[in-house]
Image (cartoon, rainbow, N blue to C red):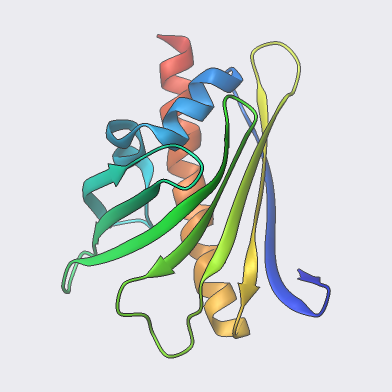
Amino acid sequence: MTHDGGLRLHMQRVLRAPRPVVFRALTEPQELAKWWGPDGFTTPSVESDLRPGGGYRIAMQPPEGDLFYLVGEFHEVDSPERLSYTFRWEDPDPEDRETVVTLSLRDAGGTSTELVFTQGDFATERRQALHEEGWTQSFDKLEQLVSLAASA
């Protein structure tokens, strides 16, 4: 998981849905709110100006504790192939720093899509592991959501 001396995440998944369905789930606020966040978290609001240079703000509610926010700016928006944006917490933990998330979508035969995800560079292995757990759980929910949408 290291790249150029930095701590990075790299994940790949094959989702049983066509790229436009997956891209919509990654970018439309009402769809994003259905799968975003680790298990037990809810997403009460998603604000998004989906264009290069546009910003976003996602409210996250843990099962216990106070509401907090994730914010960033879109670098690339290339539907249905690629999405890239900065990722930072409002009121970050001292171990946090702004990272860059990149999601690439490739046809995986039939009506499936390969999702390739990267994020980095993280300040500490502990923060990298926390994000890996959160993204894994989020992508599990995304996989269920797009599979249902594709079969409907």
